[in-house]
Amino acid sequence: MPLLVPTSTSIAAPQPGVPWPTRINEMPTVRFTDPGGLVTNLSDWANGWVLQPGAKGLDMPVYAFTQDESPGIDGYAIRQVRAGGREIALPVAFWADDSRAAYLERRRTLIRSLNPKRGEGMLTVTQADGTARTIGARYTAGLEGDESLDAAGARWCMGVITFACPSPFWLGAEVTTEWRAAVGGSFFPVLPLAVGNSQVLGAVTVDNDGDDDAYPVWTVTGPATAISLTNLTTGEVLVLARTISVGDTVVIDTRERLQTAVLNGATNLWGDLSDASTMWGLAPGLNDLTLTVTGSTSNTRVRMTYQPRYLAA
Image 1 (cartoon, rainbow, N blue to C red):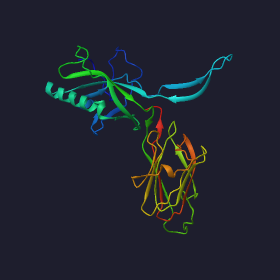
Image 2: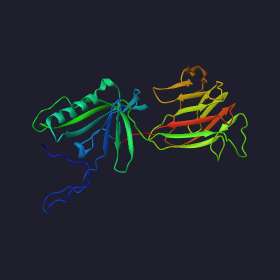
Image 3: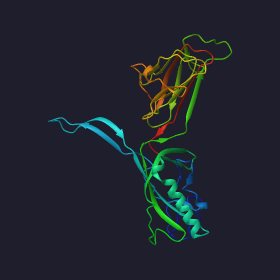
Image 4: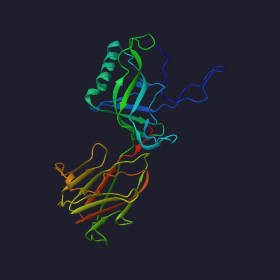
């Protein structure tokens, strides 16, 4: 059985005269969650799993450029930049100490969990500092079966498991912010109500910590007669002209390929969005927003939820 490399940093000091690298790779913890919720920790040395050095695809995605060339002019002009999906390769070894049957059961369970026809799973990478980021992934190759002497034994095997990730971005922890009219105190809602934080009514600054635009999900609880969500930083606006009653809930999902506007989980409100509306995102860094809810009361709530998007795990 080849030498396996544990993820623990508590490695014994080398004997005198033995070459030793000046720097040891600090491996992250990697988990795969299948569509059914089963979590496989690929970095669990104590229980027979180890992520080997050599993981690929955890950092920058590949970019494609749309370019224009003009006769008689050297070079080209870049018209559009688009990040493509990524491929992640994870060298993994796993084993079972008790029996061949236990090893085969572990291997078959992993294979069943990785079946890409079941839907998209999730890779979670946790760095040594506790930072965790996730990305949607489907198995593509690596567990076809290699019984070579240096790749497998009676109760162990090694291989490079490859995942296809349609989105190029890693997602950070979910960020949720809620605004509402004051229930008590000196402030009494005046219609139309501009919903903001307690310092600056009607305006709020949101800090998107990610490397790229992050697209929020807006949840507005009535009553309201119109909703206007403006990103002053990008100059974009999202306006919904629809009367909703107390207890009604409007969910506007601006995420790419998931864009919807729904009332109470059933009624499509896409036609109630203004022609000038865009499903805008939060630019990286500080974003100045203005949230205006006409016809609101102290029951009105506006909640924004998003996940920062990163270029590297």
